[in-house]
Length: 66
Ligand code: SF4
Image (cartoon, rainbow, N blue to C red; front, top):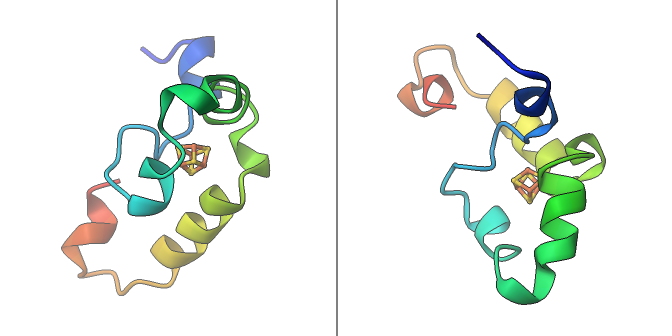
């Protein structure tokens, strides 16, 4: 069952993408909370990842992991 909280967490939050990892540090906690756990649709990395995943071939196993 999906909760309201699940809907506000970026689907890439627990991934291993290097672009996200650069943001994940203690000095940027407020940014992480506001964007990765809230308004992730406004994140430029989120938009890039969506484009990357939508342009992969269907048989690419990486695209099925997210
Ligand atoms: S909001 Fe952006 S930085 Fe945060 S997990 Fe999602 S894609 Fe990565």
